[in-house]
Image (cartoon, rainbow, N blue to C red; front, side, top):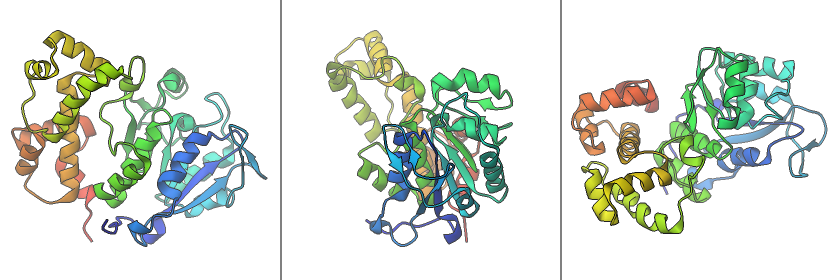
Length: 328
């Protein structure tokens, strides 16, 4: 594959993940897999990686794992990106030294992202006041009650607030980390990392798709799955419910019920998410007129794309393209 095209300065390519006693090993592993593995196919501009220990000595992670780290909180002083895995517990205090170090890192421009309950660390440091943020649905009530200044965003896999990013449950950390790769190196690099992980480069929908009833039976997968593949292959086509139902051999009412059981949303909402993701990819990769992007993604007009894009991402397509493809 072609070498990655970095959008980061060399000083900003150091990713530091926080480790501590009681570390959530899955979420820590996500950060290692995405940012910490050697990827010679990406060229010399790929991330550098280090582990910062909050506590002294070998750390005891979940599952009986013991961990040696590269240094202490001083490593945060040099990080371009800091990853905070799930915290010890939503009700466990955050050491003042850690909160101070994160505030200092944010003040000098480092990006800080949390996975799952790691959001409580960012909240304790005051980094989420007035910002949108998310976390695992089980922690939503506790986060909203303890930190009312946060604009809590439910039913999403992650929230990108520029320098501060938060994800939902543990697996949503994969989505967030891949999103950051997209920001830094473009869609081709994120797709390559996703292939190595054998996961989708972008999941549509939100936490509703992974709560109750999210996994369809094999019978449903063989009927709904081909519909999703067809819609992905041609997002600009019209996909009325009657056509989808006939294609799946169901009545429209049954199709809507089973589509929702499989994806957590309606065909129209799923298709809108797909089109917005396609538009975002096009904005990152090239500079065609906005009308051409709208038509390729499945929107009738540039105005329609602007309206939906701004509603979903809280930014205009033009501003998103400028941020995603900075000029030298």
